[in-house]
Amino acid sequence: MSVSRPATLVLLVTLLLASDGPLQAQTSAVRLRGVEIAREGSVVVVTVEATGPLPTPLAGRVDGPPRVFFDFPGIIPATRGVRSPGDPSVRGVRVALHSGDPLITRVVIDLVRPDPVRLEPDRLAEGRFQVLVGEVTAPVVIGEIPADLPPAPEPTPPPASPPPKTETLAPGSPPPVSEKATSGPAAPPKPASASPAPTSGASPPAPGASNGAGALPARDLERYRAQIADGFGRLLALRPLLTTIDQFASPPPDELQMGVEEFERVRRVMSEVDPPLSLRPTHDLLVRACALGTMATRLRAEANRTSDIGQVRNAGSAAAGARMLLDRACAEMGCDR
Image (cartoon, rainbow, N blue to C red):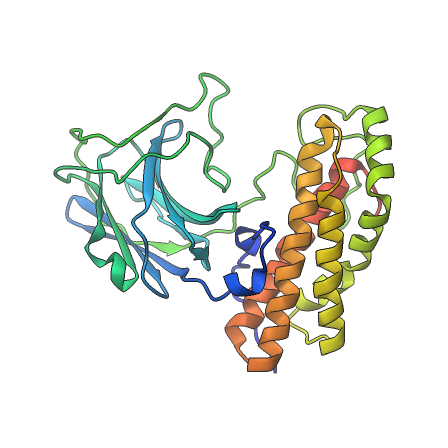
């Protein structure tokens, strides 16, 4: 069985399920599978399609740059969203996993300006989520969520100061909008980090380099490397398996089962490590890479049993995400792979 990689790599870093519960059961959850942006007169209609009924989301607004976001508990993202080329109201829509435990998927609508927004909840039970942006009456929000950042990179860097302000959506008078615009395919985002994953031909950073926050303390880095030596070595040994799955090849069933068990063992070992404060973000990358590796191997094993091409692609994307996280952690620690 062979499949062709989609034109845009779907990085299922957004599928990271870092909970302690079994990942296999969560792969059958409802998925957000597609996003469409359409203009109807002075209003932009954002439609998100799912594979099953959707719960009522929690929502909020963040300024700098302006955006609104909706959180869906118990839902898995199976799309990254779309970018809207040149629309005067909406820059695009992003979909990503916001939390692994509890499982929450976040839909972010990036706005050109703080226009009013209205959620249309009537078709949630049918698996359709619609939001109107622009000259709408009675803009509403279903609830509030904590003020934190969306789980994907911003279209433009936010200003250093003042910090982003979070508030609930409220009625307002939007400025007039014009021109017709439709959605297009999303451009692949850069990893959500100030320090991108290393690419072939690029020199690895010097030991102790961190993701934009300055050099890591050498003593902390030395202690952390000693703490994770066994688990990190085993995780690096699993990288070729991730590459095979990422390339849509079919590893033998016994190798996949070994991978599932080994990723879980390494994740448990890593979860018991208490890293130095300066290394906690890096350590979190490794723990999440283990969880994504578990998902990739489970999905690929399931795809072998069912010949489901969709599962093959999901497994490949999860494997690509695990490799990206592992490479970022290596870059931050200045290690060789």
